[in-house]
Amino acid sequence: MAKTIIVAGYGIGISKAVAEKFAAEGFAVALVARNAEKLAASVKDLEAKGAKALAITGDLGNEKSVADVVAKARALGPIHVLQWTAYAGQAGNVLEADTAAFHAVLDVATIGLTAAVRAALPDLKETKGSILVTNGGLGFFDPNVDKAAVAYNAMGLAIANSAKHKLVGLLAEKLRADGIYVGEVMVLGAVKGTAFDQGNATIEATTIANRFWQLHTERKELSVNVG
Image 1 (cartoon, rainbow, N blue to C red):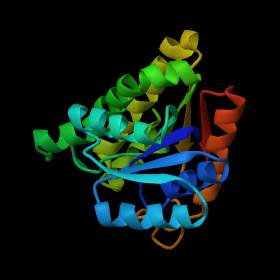
Image 2: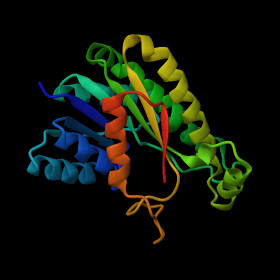
Image 3: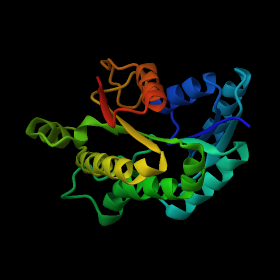
């Protein structure tokens, strides 16, 4: 049975490149997002390239929905890799955002990711698998980064990225004894072809996907920067 990767938070940029990279390496791919139509089209594209793929809709900020997603992904086979690119962009100004928006950002970054790890944990232990997390440089503790987060109206995302960065480290420490690798790519800039690309993006999504593949195969570094 093929190795299976869950690509959570599937879109047109990083996650698409990750799905295509791992599919090319022989993985079955479970694509997870809210938009069923876009997921179905992406599954067809992957299947046309000879890959086995499955579309799963779900709310990645909701624990029950995340558990259901992982259960459905097992139809492809045991989970070998959990790749988390999901994020929420609400609460740009934390002094004006309502509580629900603030929760939404943190729920996807931390609660959802943790729920996915819990649900996939039996498989990840058995397969000695990997948890691969996409994160962003707005989470760094640096005055210039804080200035940028405020200027870009991305305060909520910056806080969520910081929390997710800490969670990655904690998961790595907690799961090391189980033979599970945890790694993170910190994206330091806009990725071409994504919603963040205003025409001057310099980072190729394939560069990030290749870095994730390197992290998964070498299983050494905890966090690397791209950009």
